[in-house]
Length: 160
Image (cartoon, rainbow, N blue to C red; front, side, top):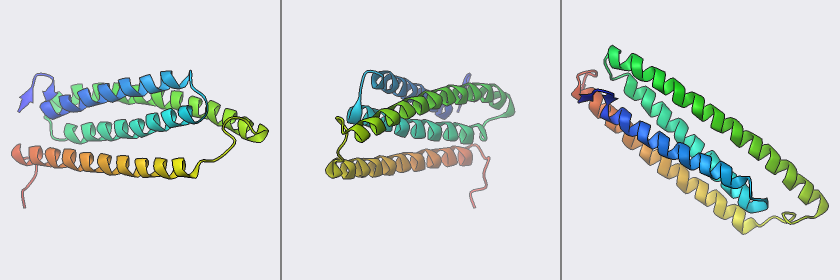
């Protein structure tokens, strides 16, 4: 089941992480040219993806526990690098959110373009977040089951 670079599941998580990292970066870059509600939505999407990336890193940590020590040590260094990359993205998001909030606060105070609240949009955003959370939970459960199955197959866990 092990490949030269570690487990296939770990490599799959690495690919998932790289894809979501690219998506987060694209959203953060796009937000710099946006204002108002579109910028908020882009930043909320990036925030949700950062949560998803955190979950992927957690799954990678779980997978490391099932690997032999030689592979584990090498992959732990890569995981540490991924965590550092995600921390940089979190800081970029935080700065963008702070900038966005101060602009929005100023606009609301002055009655600018984002001065009114759209309750339908807010409830739709809440519904979208709930659905995304449900999807992430289902995906995380699937990955956890996969990790457990692999641990059982490798004899790391007692099936009882």
